[in-house]
Each structure stands twice: as structure tokens, then as C-alpha cells.
Amino acid sequence: MATQHSRSAARFMMAPAVILLLGWMLVPLTMTLFFSFKKYLPLRGDSLANGLDWVGFDNYVRFVTSSSFWPSIYATLIIVGGVLIITVILGILLAILLDQPMWGQGVVRIFVIAPFFVMPTVSGLVWKNMFMDPVNGILAHLWRFFGAAPVEWLSQASMQSIILIVSWQWLPFATLILLTAIQSLDSEQLEAAEMDGAPVLKRFWYITLPHLSRAITIVILIQTIFLLSIFAEIFVTTAGAFGTKTLTYLIFQRVLESQNVGLGSAGGVYAIILANIVAIFLMRIVGKNLDA
Amino acid sequence: MGNISLNKVSKTFGDVNVIPPLDLEIEDGEFVVFVGPSGCGKSTLLRLIAGLEDTTSGAIHIDGSDATSVPPAKRGLAMVFQSYALYPHMTVRKNIGFPLKMAGVDPAEANKKIENAASVLNLTDYMDRRPGQLSGGQRQRVAIGRAIVREPSAFLFDEPLSNLDAALRVNMRLEITELHQQLKTTMIYVTHDQVEAMTMADKIVVLHAGVIEQVGSPMELYQNPRNLFVAGFIGSPKMNFLTGKFAEPYKAKTIGIRPEHTDISTKSGDWKGTVGVAEHLGSDTFLYITIDGGDSFTVRADGELDINYGDTVYLTPRKDKVHRFDEDGLAL
Image (cartoon, rainbow over all chains, first blue to last red; front, side, top):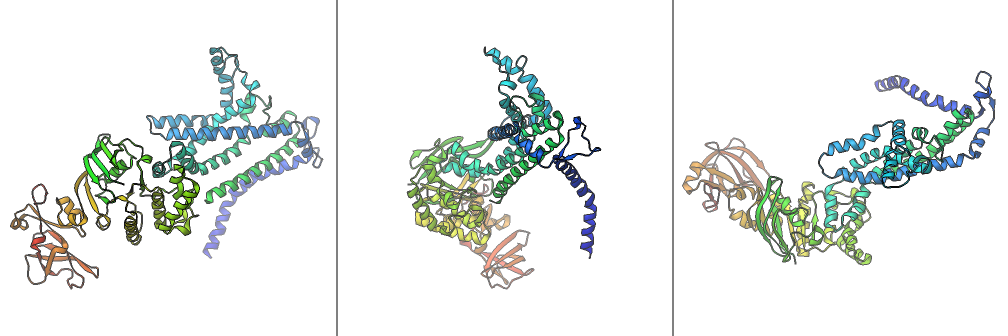
């Protein structure tokens, strides 16, 4: 049969890509799982060549019972939640603003997208040195101009600062998706609501916002997945100090600063589980939304 | 009450003068149809009355009071849009109830009005569905229901049937006419379809390039078109226009003869011609004839006429039904 023939040919042709992708995922995953059950402290002389001691679930227990674990979960949730709230709300407002007919719309839109093109490390450094530096930063100058004592952003308001930096980076993404959604709203619906006696705010609440609900869900889903793993912004600003140590950052510290590969791997497995729980949860919301 | 009067109303978009100053009176309880080819400004005129567009100059009076700068919600008018503009995330019940909710009507009373509108429009079985789960005709009825519950002083329809298929269109046409007879509310209806205009209207307003060409009852427009445009626009198939030697005996620049006002014979008559296409509809036969000299002429003849492609025929217009027009296209 020709179809069967072509089907097996297709499988054969696709095999390299599938194998590559699977290997790409499976090799690190198995290695992480493998290390998470071993005592592996390279600085104490442990190495693969000498053989690693099997320690069962010791690493998992130690990771969770460590005093940094719950604060790191808390920090992760605060940062993800804060950034989501800020980007979604400001994103909707900016999208409405950009949807208004105005002079130089095209240029303004490009400017709005710009922060998304800046690498996380760079934007972290720019914010740290140019804006939030307590001596030379623009914000410090501004505070002094009004006679106030400059805020030491990254130590006194560390969490807020990180949320601000990350929100600045992700706002364009939210704005862009929400803008396209707003543009797809049938103007006759708004006119009908106007005729029906709904003033501007009610039109927004009853017509525009429900129309945006799908886009908002998608923004939340995609951003959550990426925000769970933010790293560079924290690394270059607070380096995990002042309560900004997220789960991702904690794992990094366990593996590279404490040189405890086993413990870090166990943390990695926790992170995988956490991300998957969030993903399943969000997929169901999106799925429900996409049905309607 | 629902009389609307437009006084020297005009509208320009930038440099484009869509509607030059125009006067129009609409009496209470009338079914008025704005008809004209696309781009003639009929929808703009409706939107001016609705308040969705601002007038460039002139005044609009609704129920005797100046409504020119009154916002759309406060004019007491309800509009049915071409795309229906239903709220996709709300059920039929909530769609119909939306204007009441915005007006802050007591929920129990609102519910009564919604049920009432639903039973008038046969929507009772679909109240908990969303617009996406309804057919075109049902959506149309929901849009009308949303307009009815407000008990407006006038309904505005913007080409409401153009998204429906032919059979449904005829049905909805009847339903809207019946609704008008039940409610006896002023209705303004915009369409480009002269059949809808002829069948539904008490008064037809023929628009062309923003200018009112003629206002009158359907039969007035059919019998006494004021100019060439109205004569050609009203009536289907279109009126035949002949000039030159055909018009001379009638002392006119152009004469117009409706297809149904021409006698056809295979033996003798005023003009000789050759049949091009013959459309046999059963009830009627439409014959597209080329008269000697090259002019084309449409004849509406008896349904069982046995005339086909290539036959030679003779045409005789009924003298008393011939419309005469001067150089400027105005009726004589």
C-alpha cells in the first residue's frame, strides 16, 4: 500500500528530529534524576569515576527542610504574581491607549515593544546602575531634586525592584497580545452597547474586558511559564540577597555556590514538578476558555 | 411618540461631503425605508439620526425636542446593526436584558419585559444559548429583541437582512413588517434592495450621493418617478430607457417604459427586435431583446409564452404608461 509506504517513510524521515529533541530533553532529565539520588560534592572528591554513593531520598528531604526552601517558594510566587498583575493591568491600559487613532502610531508601537528586545542581563544591569543606584541613579537624582533621601532600591525595596524590572521587560509582550485582541473587537458591538445606554466604563467592563478574557488567559499562561524561571535579573541585581532568592536561584546556589550537585538536582526535580502542576492547571483554564 | 425631523442636516468626513444639507420629516408610527446604491450615504444618515455620528451642521429633532447634541443612549432610539452586534459572551437572555440592566430597571420587571419580547419573537426556547449557537435568523431576532425591550420611540435598522440567505430574508421581511403592525412604532430601515423597500415601506426615501432624489409611498415612486435615477432604481426588472428616434414621437429626450408595460407579439408592433435571453420563471417570462438599432430592452411577459432565443418579435409600449424625461433627466 502506497499510504502505508509513505507513512513509514515519513516516520523514517522524521526520526532524526524526534530523536534529537527527545535526547535533548531526556538526557538532562535522566541525569538530573540520577544525581538527585546520589551524594555528589565535587569539592569533597566525589566524582563519577570513583562512583557516587546512593543516598535514596535524602537530598529531597534536605532540600525541602532547608530554611531557604519556603522563603524561596514565597519569593517565586510573589514575583510571578506581582509581575502578572502589573503587566496585565498596565498591558490592557496601554493596549487601549495604543488602539486610539493618533499621530505616529507606528513609531510609538515600535518603541513600546523595544524593552522586549533587551536581554535580561542587560536590562537588569541598566536598571541597577542607571536607575536604582542610590548615588548615581536617575531615581536617586529625582529623589534628591525633591529634597528626599534617595531610596536604596535593591536592598530596601528589593522585591518591588525586581518586580519592577521584570514587569518592564514583560509589559511589551502583554501589551502586544492584548492590543491585537482589542483590534479584533467588532466596533458595532461597542456602538450597540453605546445605544443600549452603557457609558464608557461599563462598555469596557461588559464588552471589552470579556472580549479580552481569552487573550488575558494566554498572556498569564505564557508569562507564568517564563517567569517561574527568571534568573538573570536576580543574578545581576541582588544576587539572591534581601529575600529575592527564588526557587530557580536556590537551585543555582546549591549546585554552583555550595557545589552540591545532588541537592541541587533534587531541587530541580521539584521545580519540574511545580512547573508541570502550573502548566496543567493553566492548560485546563485555557482549554475551557477556548471551548466557549 | 416618534416623529423625527431633520433640518438642513449635513455631514462631511474631512474633505468629502457625504451628505449635503438635507431636510426630511418622519411621522410617528411610519415605516420609512432609506434606499439607494451602496455609498449613497443612507447608512451615514441613519447613524446621524442614531447619534453615532455627529452632524457637521443642521439640527435633528426627535419628538419635537432638539436632539442634535444629545448622546445616542439618551435619544430613545434603538438600533439593529447589520452584523447584529450581539454580545458573544452573554446568553440570549442577557443580550436582550442588557439595555434594561444599563438603565437600572428592577430585575423582576426586566425579566417580565425580556420574556415578553422573547415570546413576541419566538425566542423562548433559546434563552440560555449564546449567540454563537444560534442560526442567522435567530441572531437577527435576538438583535430585534434587544431593541424592543427598550420600548424606543423609533427603531433604526441598518441593512438587517443582508447577511441572511434569500429564503430567510423573505421570512424576516414579513416578520419585521408584522412587528411594525403590532408595535405601531416608527421604524427607519436602511437597505440597498429596492424589493425590501417596496414591500415594507409606508414611505420610501431614495438617496443618491447623499441627496434625496424622491420621497413618497412605494406606489407613488413606481407610478411617478421624479427623475431618471428613481425611475431606474425602483422596479424590477429595471425600467427600459430609450432615446433618439424612439423618444421623438413622445416629445422627450428620454422615454422610460417598464418591462411589464410592453406588449409583445410575433406578428406586428411599433418596434422590431430579436430575443437574446429568455428567462422562463413559470409565473413570468423575462425577455432580453435587442431592438433594431442596437438598444437593449427587457420585457416582462406572460409565463407560458413560447418565445425563445433568436426569435423575431414586435414590441408595443402602452402609451399611457410611458414615462417622459427632459435633458436634465427630470420627469415631464
